[in-house]
Amino acid sequence: MPANMSCSSSPSIFLGLDLSTQSLKAVALSVPGVEKALEDIEAGLSWEGGGSSKVIWEEEVNYEDALGSDGVSRNGSRCTQGVSTYLRAFDELMRRARADPAMGRMMKHVRAIGGCAQQHGAVYWASEGEALLRKLNESAPSSGGGGGGNNNQDDSPTLYAPLEGWGAFSRSDCSIWMDSSTEDVCDELNLKFGEDVVSKRTGAAFTPRFTGPQLAKFARDDPELFQATSSVQLISTFLTSLLLGAMGPTDFSDSSGQNMVDLRTREYDGEILAALDPSGALISKLSSPIVPSCTVVGVVGGVLRGYGFSPTCQVVAITGDNPSTAASMNLNISSAAISLGTSDTLMTTFSEIDEATRGSDSFTFPNPTKDQTFINMTCCTNGGTVRAQACSDIAGGDWSVFDRIISSGSGKRGGDDGGGSSKWLMKCPVDESSPRVPRGNFRSGGGWIPEDELYALVQTRIMHLDQKSPKGISRIMLTGGGSRSPAIAQLIADVFGADVWHVRSGSGNAAALGGSLMALQGFVSGKNRMPVDYSDISGKIAEAGWEVWKTPDGAMEDFYASIKDDYREWEMSVVAKGVEKKGRSKLKGKTTRSLFDWLLGRNN
Ligand code: XUL
Image (spheres, rainbow, N blue to C red):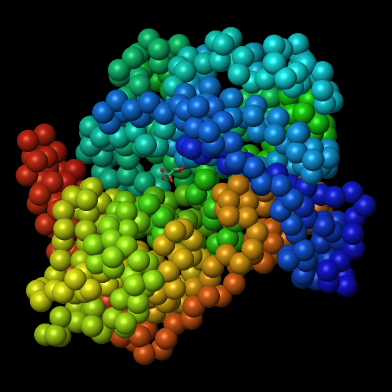
């Protein structure tokens, strides 16, 4: 521990939660010397204690394992998840926290709870919901044990599950991000407003998984039930409410996942609400206010006090999982995050909203840790599964052979077809979200051998991510299954001309960890007399878990710089072909103008 750090007598714990589609996760972070850190900052000194924080407890309530089902129902393009899944997982997590020898003792030392949830989904409350939530919290005992007047078998102090039984919700199923049943609603709304206009206003063109189009479809398909719904909450706001024991406000960063909030005014956009629900009822159902991320919105409710949390334990507005992941990396203007998972994602930061909205194949949300900056997220659907298939077809399923093929290609072989042109390949078993092309295989030139395929596949994806990034990125935070490949990491360093960092220590649960760091930020901001920048304390803890892994090779960097124009042209030709193909099927639906917007949006 650095000499200027003192140990405070009682530990300071910050809890982060992540309410995702598969599980509810938790990370408890112990941060020694919070008071001393604040003194240092007030004295104008830089706090050097970032590396001294420790994850003391991590837990995951996997819905399938713990509850027997993930509660997801699919019917064609419609996809929902039962609200009882979230409630039961919440109960289970609290029970596990209290039963854990380390965490059980630390519950009373948790200073603040923050976290995140899957984006875009909505929970539908009935008019009795709010009163029931309050009643449940008021009837809970104020300290651990007791039963709290509920019928919980293991005599845990409280149980959230009764909420559903008591009729707190108008719908037992929540719309979630995996739903794409609102495609027609989105086409219609994009045609009305123009994709680019909506994107500049709300951060994204009308997108099937976003909350606004989901609400428009709900209002049209079942007007009676829609009217009977008194409150609609993002899943993040719902989690805030469970923690508070009362209806909570909405986090600004996650609010952008709705297609309903004007990112400049930070208010719901009246014109868009009127288009979503011409009856005018929608506004009264939406959560307000919309508060800046990392805002302390109150203290824990009776239920949590019953589990042993202190009555002074603060609740910080819950955000979305992608903003929270960005917080776990202290993402800033000169850094980018790349996750190579089932899908590949890129997050980059901008100081202007107009610059951040980079076409209708990506989504922009407010940076949760740096006010007035924005993060653009590009998500490429055909990621890990396509790489795994190529590994099995071409490298015999051996990832070390896959890696060797990529590094021995050393750019020139895979990037040059012998006639001076580069080789590009996009394999899309399903429609690709970025660049927006329909399913199919797209390749340049001829003279391919199998190894070229593998190399070109990886190189093409990285070139696309580079095209979506602003200039001047010096650091890339790399995560996800594909990030284990040293050859891919080197290729990223060479194409971007930036250092590639990977996780050294800490928690693998980036989204939940981000929640604990945002909880810490909310806590210190409220405590200090002067503003505390996220980078002063939380950001330093975040960065201590990362290290530089690969640096660019100068010659390769030059080589990639020389073929970027060629790539850009090829990508535009592929997108144009895709528009033509989509046009042929969509013309039947008379949405020519939206196709035009679609192309324009892409090229912005
Ligand atoms: C982001 C998105 C997903 C969900 C999943 O736009 O839809 O990443 O947040 O958790």
